[in-house]
Length: 249
Image 1: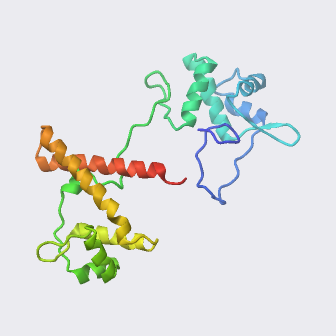
Image 2: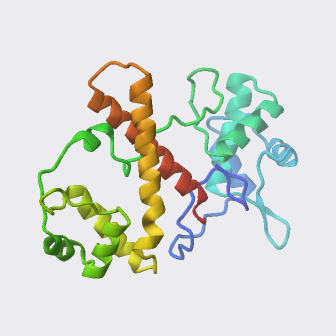
């Protein structure tokens, strides 16, 4: 909700975005005019009091005049509405603003009006259970797999050696092998060889081990295949979330 300079609610621009226009600056008189219809009793002294309480942080010009952004204006509206409609003390408002600054959602008039944590949403990049259960009938020869993904023969042999590629009894490679080989090709461009990728195979085996353990020890409704896919999808989502949390920002 806030940025580091104005203290007001904002929508962050992309980092390094040089095309974003500078926020407009409003004088305290223009702020009062913008607020007057909804809050006819608001005064300059009231706004300065809210500033002294740290609830809004206007910019100061070189000559000392206060200027406000649209984010500051929205923040003032939130504070004034919370006082008028919900009778919140400043301590509660300050806590609510902090929650909004940290990404919680404003529920409006629902519940008690306090900011609420956002509901978790499925990651569109993580395959759901149905995608894991579904099978695609494709069986490629080694040359076809290399042609489709760009890996060379040595890399392909190494991927087989370390268990990342596993042909069937007829020496053919299924659809999942396409994804494995394509990912290995991308990683090779960053200097990661097949031998570096063995931990991924180990981790996958451990996740499947967990799935099988749950299926063996806990009964559940639905076909075994569907339950396995649901558990595996949750494991993948957990893995992706943990990796994203550790990526440099």
